[in-house]
Image (cartoon, rainbow, N blue to C red; front, side, top):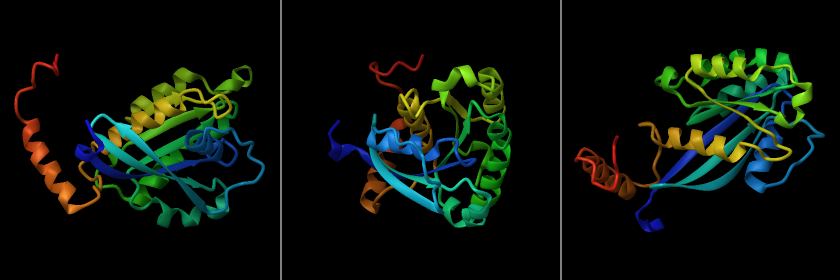
Length: 210
């Protein structure tokens, strides 16, 4: 399918979690392909953009990296609003960072006020999977928690890039299918509405629904 017929979607992803779990490192590895040792903490929030080609959509991701320190959390409100998906990050070598995830999740829901919190796309990342010998958080424990909250879950490494692209593609695909997603222009919206009526027709032989 050419770019001309693709739906153009703008998505805002926000990355939350305790200070030092690797939020900035994950973002830089994903967008720039580089591992950056985090020497300085993020002040407030910052964002990077990346374009992603999904089957029928051209998605522009605006990924917001936020400060994990307590003193910046009052800023959360402004940054959380309008988010289409939320990425929650903990460090597998730091049990405390995992225990705080539920607090980050509930704070996000209360401040971003999504229409349907239970359906809102959350992605849980257990970062620093390259340090398995120092692991404090059991993978099954994290997976069980994520499932209980309807979240997608991956263990990642900003050092070697493990699972980062797959995880972000996964949550982008889910978020871009939500009813609340902003499309770029009225013209495009009209095309989408036409497309939606076609979706109701029986599946063609090429797309088996089995």
